[in-house]
Image (tube, rainbow, N blue to C red):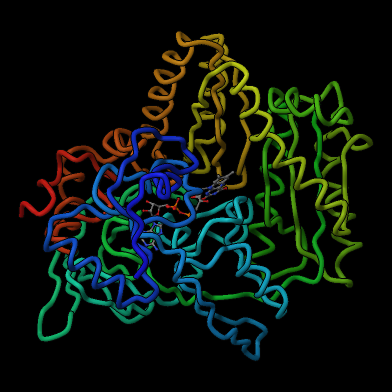
Length: 504
Ligand SMILES: Cc1cc2nc3c(=O)[nH]c(=O)nc-3n(C[C@H](O)[C@H](O)[C@H](O)COP(=O)(O)OP(=O)(O)OC[C@H]3O[C@@H](n4cnc5c(N)ncnc54)[C@H](O)[C@@H]3O)c2cc1C
C-alpha cells in the first residue's frame, strides 16, 4: 500500500471545498483493496491513531479535513463492475468507493441507463456521495443517493469487512441493532431515539428509526462508522429527451403559486403513473440572485422578481403535449412568458445548466473581492411551512441590511441562503443570523442539513436539532462500531461526546 508522509505531498488532503482551516495529518494511506482498508483500520484502532476518510474532497462541511493522525484515501478503490440491464430497462452496477461520480454516470448513459443522484459537483467519488447521502436538483423527482444503494461493502475498525444488502438486515422494533461478524462475534448497539424531521430531504445525524434496514445506518454516516469500500447501485432507464425552462416572474407571489401548482401536478402525475407535468427539477432564484446573474446574462429581464428553472423528461410522443402543458402553466401564473427560456435540445439545456451553475461561482468571486467567506444555509422544512420560512429569511436579512442571494431546490422546500458579508462586522452578523434561521427551521419541524451533511462545521446546529441526550445516543452507537473511537473524529457530533482515541 502506498503511504505518503512528506508534508508537501499531502497538503491537498488537508482541506475540502468548505475551506475549513487547520487540517493536519502525519500520513496519507492509499489502500488498493477492501482488505487493505480493513487491515489499516484495525492497525489504527490498535494504535489509537485517528483516521479520516477522504473521497474527492468536494464536501462543503469539512468532513474530510483531518485534525491529526492518518488520512485514508479511497482514490485507488476505483473499479467499476459489470453493468447489468434487466428486462424492464432498469439495471445495476457495482462501483468502488473511489469511482468518480461523473465517470459512473457517463458509463451508465452509454448503456442506456441513468444514475440519478446528481449533486452538481460531478468530480466527487461514489463513496463520498454514499457517506453524505448526497442529493441535488434531480432529487425532487428521484430522491437522494440512499434510494439507489442496493448493497454496500463496509470496512470496520475491528478489521472486519461487512457485506450489507438492502432487505436482509433490520433493527429491532425496540431500536436494537445486532450485526454478526465472523467467528461468533457481533456488534450490539441501540439506535438513537430521536424522530427524524418530516422533510423530503434530511442529511443531519444518523438515519434512525425502529425496524429500519441497517444498510441505511451507513448511508449518510459521514465516515464515522466504517469505510464504504464498494457500493452496488440501482440504475433507471435513460430518458429519451428532456424539456427544460427558465421562467421569470414579475412578483414572488406568482412565482410561488407556479411552484405550488407544478409541484402538486408532478406528484399527481407520479401517483397516477400518468404522462402529464412531472418535473424532475424545480429550482429557485430570488431577485437578488438574478441581480448577480444579470451582470453575465444581460437577457435576464430587468423587471423579474425571481425565476424558476425546471426540467421534465419526455419521449418523442409526449414532448409536444408536455411543452404545451408547461406553457399553459406559465401563462396561468402570469410569468414573463416572452422573456422566459425553453429548450429541448442538448445545447439549449447545457446553456440553462450553465446559467444555474454560474450563480455560486459569481458569488464566490464577489466574496473573494470583499475578502470574506460565504455563510450558506442548508435547511429544509415540511411542505406547509416553506412560505413562512422563506418570508422569515427575507425579512430578517432585509432588517439586518445584509447582502444575500437565495436559490436552490424549491421543489423540496430546500433553498440555500447565501449571506454575503461585506466586512468583519457583517460576518459576525451573518453568523448570528444563521443561528436564528436554524432555530426557526427546527421550530417549524425542519432539518439543519438537507443535503450537505454536518461534518465539522455544522455540529452545533445538530445539537440545536436533537439536543444533548440524542448526541450521546449517537456517540454510543458509534462506539459500538468503532470501540477505540479513531474513525472520522470531529465529524457529526462534538469531540466532547467521545473518549480520547484509543482510550477506551
Ligand atoms: C460546487 C459544489 C456543489 C455541490 N452541490 C451539492 C448538491 O447540490 N447536493 C449535495 O448533496 N451536495 C452537493 N455538494 C457537496 C457534496 O456533498 C459532495 O460533492 C459529495 O457528496 C462528497 O463526495 P466526495 O467524494 O468529494 O467526499 P469528501 O468531501 O472527500 O468526503 C465527504 C465526507 O464523506 C466521508 N467519506 C468519503 N468517502 C467515504 C467512504 N468511502 N466511506 C466512508 N466515509 C467516506 C468523508 O470522511 C467526509 O466526512 C456540492 C459541492 C460542491 C463543491
